[in-house]
Length: 376
Ligand code: SAH
Ligand code: SF4
Image (cartoon, rainbow, N blue to C red; front, side):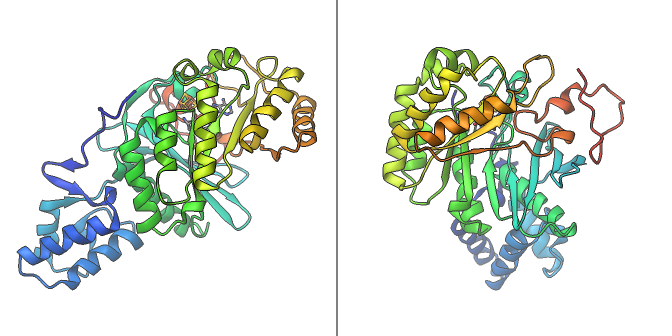
């Protein structure tokens, strides 16, 4: 998998300001206004619209003269998302289904948790990795998202959160649709923009990967303290291969070496995500193998009950089995938590994104407010 299908951040010669670093935005705007002999503080005004508001048309930048807005729209664009459907869970989780300019659909999820508001972002339309337990993977891959389209999810979600008194977005996880490290150029640019432009602290941004080691090393080489989650799901290669085809290309020993490197360079604890599927990866013997692996890289382990997905009859592990795994890990000195999936009633939980949208029959009503039906 490569970055070659990255959509352009340019549209008819216009650059997408949302996909640039704040320094690049400043430089482009300064040059734009200088060459037109216009006052420099216009750049500060545009900057404020980008980072503080959610307007996606220069026309709406109402403190600028009309001709200035027009000139800007000839040189630049701001990626925008059209709201297709919004679903709100009884637990407060909100899923937005967004339509992109070419008609493709992506989802992002807002998860309130005490004072924290976490945004779960998509990095691709679909996913090419094809993990057997993941609805996003089953639906296949359409295209990469541009950096601007990733950042646009943040801006649009922030606008919704402000209007609905959800407070500021405090954390970001790249755990929506897609494999972020298979779209490295756009994901790296979006990390920079979200961190330095939109002011989300690097320690509060986590990239989740199925285990693309070149991407892990690249993330480790960045100066910021972005977090890393590895979707492990099986502590032995033979089993992992049956769940995650990528295991064949980047097997566990290679992966663990990259994680050790990440930990050593960043001094940051990596998280293992372990989705527990009944009679698939929850054999009692696997708990101690998992403990060994986690100890080896001093990872934090999240045990997540599997979310059933369409066209697949697997079930989540029994609560007692999950508790047993937790006890074995704790006894081995591994930090571990059981994570209950959020937004289950609206199919907002991990691995379910896009499934509902894709199987909704033509003309069927759009689900809103916890009434979403999964069609099997
Ligand atoms: N591609 C990246 C990020 C998106 S998936 C990755 O795989 O890490 C986000 C998380 O949801 C991953 O940990 C993934 O393994 C998990 N997941 C996928 N399908 C799931 C399911 N049906 N039940 C529970 N977790 C699932
Ligand atoms: Fe892609 Fe992640 Fe789903 Fe695997 S779990 S198919 S990598 S989105």
